[in-house]
Length: 291
Ligand code: AMP
Image (cartoon, rainbow, N blue to C red; front, side, top):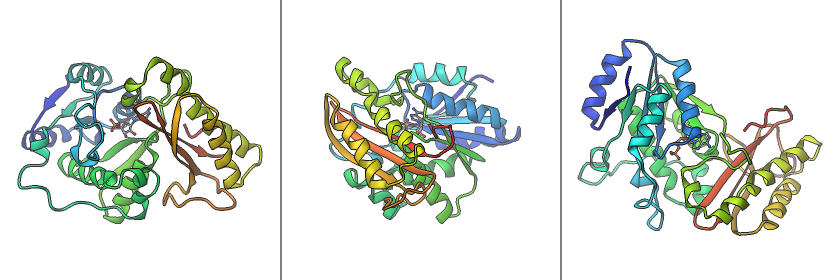
C-alpha cells in the first residue's frame, strides 16, 4: 500500500475507518523533519500492526513565545519518502487552522507536577501544549497502539500519566533512543549545531553513561551521580549552560533523594550553541542501557 497523504480530519476519519477493517492501527505522532529515531518507531509500529499511521504537525501550542516555531525545520517530500520506505500507510498532515479552528481553543489538558519539573521549569506551557495536541490526535486517529521515543523521557511520562489519569484507550509503546555513531541522540534540532558544536555534543551522552557506569559499579547515591554528570558537562567546551541535571522516578519525575532506585531516569538539558539538547538514560543494573 502506497503512503497516503491526508490533510483534513474528516478525510482522515473516513480513510481510517476503511483501513481499520484490516486490523489494529499503530500511530506515530511527529513534528516532521524525520530521522532514524522517528523511523525506528514507524518500523516498530509496522511489525506490530495491520495499519500504520504517522502524523506531521508542528504544534504551535507547545512552543513558547521566544522559541523556534517559525524556524522549525521542515521537508515534507523527504519525510514522505522515508515514511513510505519504512512501510507507513497513512500520513496525517493537517494545517494549524485544521487543528485549531477559530474561535481560539479554550479547553486544554493541563498536566500537574509532572509537567512543571525538568523541561517544564524552562518551558511552563510546553506540556500543556503537548498533552492537548496528543489527546486531539488520539481522538482523530483512534490508535490501538501509539509509539513514542524514550529520547523525550518527560514527554513519555506526561503522556503515560495522561492516559492513565484520563482513561485514554489504547496502548503506549516506547522505543529506545536512536543515536549517531558517536552517541549523540538523533534530533531534528541537531541541524542547528555548527561544526564545532556538533563535535562537542557527544559529551551529553558520555556524561550520562559515565553515571550509568558508576551506578553499575555500586554508586547509588543520587547527589553523587548528579554531581558526576554535572562535572563532565562543565568540563566540555561550548556548553554554555546546564539547565538541569536530574535523577528522577521515571513515572512521577520526583527527584531522587538519597538512594537511587533501579529504573530511575538520569536526564539533562544543556544549551549548546543555539539549540537546547536533551538526553536521558535509565539507570538499570542490566546491560541494556535503557537507550
Ligand atoms: P518530534 O518530531 O521531535 O516531536 O518526535 C516525534 C517522536 O519521535 C517522539 O516520540 C520522539 O520522542 C521520537 N524521537 C525523536 N528523536 C528520537 C530518537 N533519537 N530516538 C527515538 N525516538 C525519537
